[in-house]
Amino acid sequence: MGKRQLGQMQPFELVLTLIIADLATIPMADVSIPVLHGIIPLLTLVILHFLITLITRFSNLISKVLSGKPVIIVNPNGIDYKAMKKLNLTIDDIFASLREKGFFTIAQIQYAIIETNGKISVLPKSEFAPPTCKDLKIEANESFIPITLICEGKILKDNLSLSNLSEEKVKKIVKEKTSSNIKDVLVLTIDQSGEAYIQLKSGKGQSFQTERLVKA
Image (cartoon, rainbow, N blue to C red; front, side):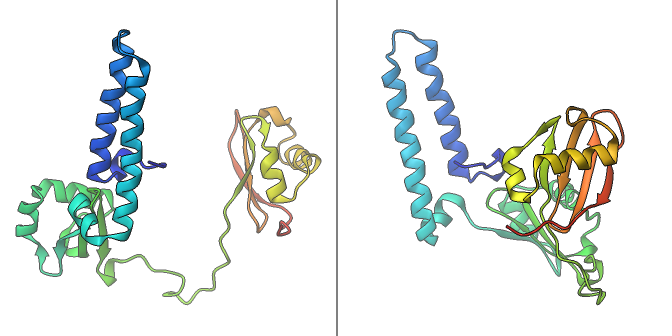
């Protein structure tokens, strides 16, 4: 099923997960049942999941039948009472979901949508939406994904090639910033712009600027 969490699963995936867990315990609990008799139904369910996922990708109708469709629970007029009852939700449920998104009053919300996996998506009113650099007419630097070079005292050699840094260069950075050894470093990250972060296993983390990485 990939890297989905339980809260991100579609309803049919949650059902399959529970069935698979139940089937897996049968041959383990009863030694008289051949392992093959447990493996075959498990493989069947895995194949079934693959086929259902494939079908729902190409058929919106089947996708709606199996997974349902998103429902607007809050609109510019307020909470949709009919939708709330249809989804078997309470006002407390809606408010709790909105608070998780950082909104504490309905007056701040233009639309709120209950997704097919039960999560809520919120579109705030324009006056309550956080400003962007474009709104403020501020020129922003390009964002980069930090590369982890050291994790719990070990150099991640696969990531060294991504950063185009040598092991000696990493050791030099650690020595200059902490006067410690690699094994004492909890984490060291660096991004394309040269923005780095380092923290020892016992100590406070610090950000610093180093040489800009050369693109691979």
